[in-house]
Image (tube, rainbow, N blue to C red; front, side, top):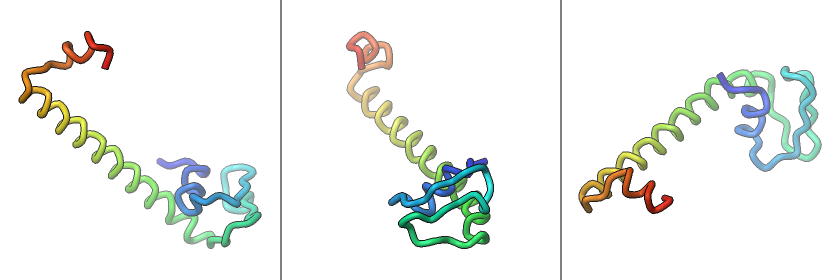
Length: 84
């Protein structure tokens, strides 16, 4: 599950938010547009889904790169030997 600071960064990536503690009441909106407690609470599931999408995309990109390397006749050991 996402952590409070991850949800805040997900909802307001531009910053402008200070958080003290792990709950909505500890959030101070310095220069960011405030979000509601409901948005904050829903943000945990949204952030988890976004992170899962990012991890799946990274895994797919790695699999694609490995397939391309295999097509060229290179193995992961070959890349390790080259320091890649």
